[in-house]
Image (cartoon, rainbow, N blue to C red; front, side, top):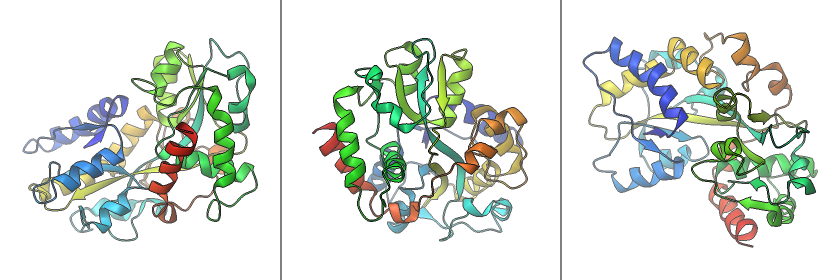
Length: 316
């Protein structure tokens, strides 16, 4: 199970197809999903006879799956590339490691917005009233709360009321909380002028839209997001799944995928092309402007935060 859309297309071309060529005895079937919550629900419903062998999942949701024993711990002898991961990609519990590093960004339509936004505060600019796409009832909203707490001089571990109140003020200016089919298409088509989204997909759409879609790193900094790759417990194809996970976190696959999809690599042996690196969270600018976040701690608050966004901001 993996993320839908451009992620699936690029991952299939740069990781799955080369893997199948190297392992002709193994066939990989990609099942697209909308988000990590969907993966969690499907795996919970099929725990005794899981519907997948390998699952991608946001690092803020994966610990829940680990505690429920939906994912298995990995054996470094069978997944040797675990030893080649950067420290921040390693799992402290021995479960699935990071597959990608990404970051939250502002997106805008360059044909309709002549002065590029530079700050998270620009989302509240009166010029964009009624033209905002804010799909924040998920990890994007959780990451945005962390960024806003920094701007407001608050501590997200103590009290998120300041960020929630700030988002409530934005609510009347939002055109849609759930752009269809996704926020990147909404910006490209001009259905929305400004949005929040993930940098990697924003960079991909920048290429495919001839620069109409533009991702921005706000001057206050951004929050890094991690997607993990996991071996499903009770998998019927454990050996093949372990081989695939090892390949996906290996240097060859990581470089091929990240150079095209604009994620930062998890394998220490990867050197991205200069252009790709400057457009990922691995760039010197993004590394300098990272807002620290404790995703392990946030796992215990994730659902409550998303519920507050849905009830107080979107439904308020």
